[in-house]
Image (cartoon, rainbow, N blue to C red; front, top):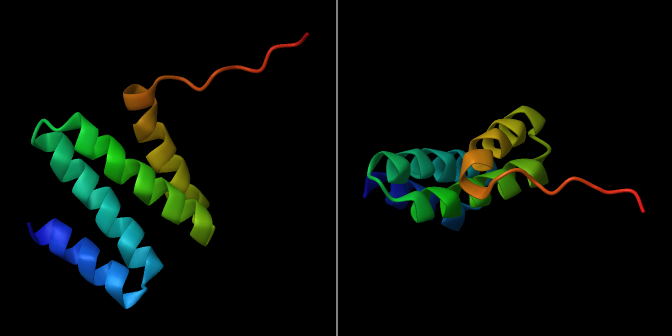
Length: 79
């Protein structure tokens, strides 16, 4: 509950970096609780926020964590 409360506080206060960090932490908690859909939801949110903020390292870390949940992105094909 405290992770979700932190996310709500960060969202209401408009502190986007705190919101992204809270979403990433909540994704970890959801994953540890055996909730892959919740993990996916909060990782996507964190990734979008980090990308929006230009936090490249954090966005890349989240993208790497998403790969096993979403699968590899489709490769471009020629032709």
